[in-house]
Image (cartoon, rainbow, N blue to C red; front, side, top):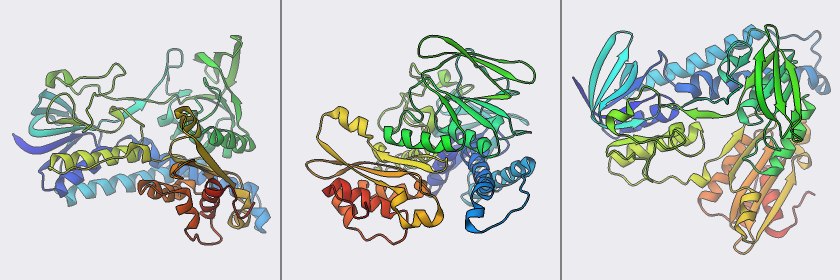
Length: 466
């Protein structure tokens, strides 16, 4: 029987990062993955493939609608969806192969199969070659999540699809219905809207990206409308049916009136739920919350000493980078170190175009505290770099404490916002004030100047360039 200091179940960003860090800290480490490729949802059917398709569709959309303004003639323009999908697969394979390389490099033993507890220190791995048992001192559960759905919208994976099937489409839908105005629905909706689909979003809330700052929601909605998106808010989906060559969606609107929508496909994008099936948690005595998540304390340890859980199976945002931070945190904790995670400073990103990115508190959250605050905003169209590139949609918003000037939140919708947000994360990690950011010299012409100007607005109410 193989014996390990630490065994990780699940090889997504949280799991494989935890494994590497454990190995780097001198712990004999094993990782168990039920699929034949490492990387979990993120690398195989989530973050990486969706960004590959977003980039491909963005290039096509730019060529079709904006190249002529730059003096570039494309002639008869077309695209090949199959080639786009094949390129996406290649990106996925390269990335997953890279994780396999890192496992070998760090002498981590990889077991393919389903890992389940026999008891707290013994794990059974059931794979294509039968069963084997490994003994472990500590275990990290990193099994991630899977697409969520509610009664009436059960995916059939043919015309009523999840994000997984949306990454392997054989055709571009003429009419695509999207249930849910969150990150997944808007990103994948963007892919097909750029390629010619009529995208209709049906959302239960009164806005898209409802967990983000309202200013961002409004600005992104305006941008997506320009791409042809149609939005239906305050709609409660009752059922979706596959009619063979089309889908029919029935919903109740704000007035409780029944309305129907018709499309070629329906993408169910109402979030994700923790995946804990088959782990045999009961054999180890591990408790779940009433929401199906693994219960942990402030050190990400379950109710069973020596068993930890990270990522989408525990409370908090379901983000790959949050899982990675938790993987490092647990590895260092097991090794006797005293790490920390500031959950308030985990950035969130929506990879539409323009991108949306945020860190810290929204204005709505700050207002609810009753503490005095101030806001600085700066429109992206006022930046010389934005005009030069024609990416003029968006705004940067900085929220600061009225009395101390400490930055409480930064929210932006802009080209490359996913990269720009890190300036705010670093600043807030060191408790920077709006004045601190405003006084830092930013290169010209860049999008980053928008952060400086918004900070200047929060600090003294007077940006330079508006």
